[in-house]
Length: 81
Image 1 (spheres, helix red, strand yellow):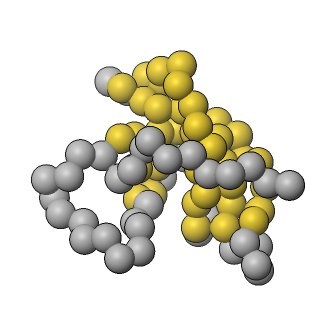
Image 2: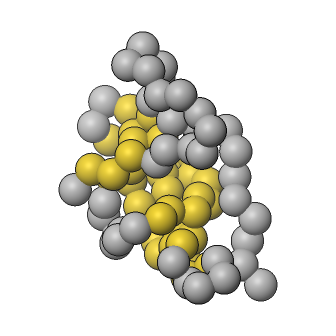
């Protein structure tokens, strides 16, 4: 499965670089109604994962092993309490 994360109020063009990241662990649900899932992702290059991983928030269905298409890959989500 491929999911793309889109940021609010940001125009998406085809020439913007994207990074692929594989969901390594689902950490839990967050948001007022629990509609956002916090996951740990590992970045992929050339089809295999690199050692770098960050925590991201994902809206919509997601499970371990899914591949996310990240438009912004430097920002990390705050951890759940």
